[in-house]
Length: 67
Image 1 (cartoon, rainbow, N blue to C red):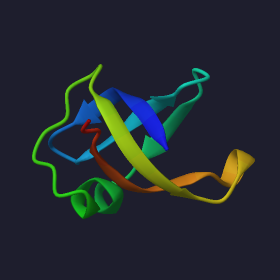
Image 2 (tube, rainbow, N blue to C red):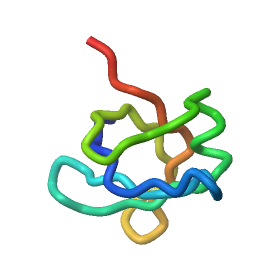
Image 3 (spheres, helix red, strand yellow):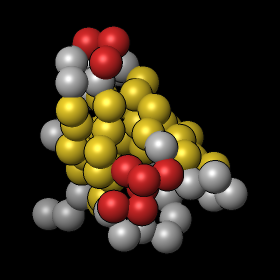
């Protein structure tokens, strides 16, 4: 799934992304670390993997979208 980075805190390695429908979804440090990234800037296009649906939707991986 693709999304756009929205917020990112380098100290805690947590943040949120916006899905294509505008829904914000938070991610935690393990999801960020799983992608091997060192930094994330707002507006970057990312690829995410998720578990669950609706209110229980959880991001398990955040990495940069490459073409």
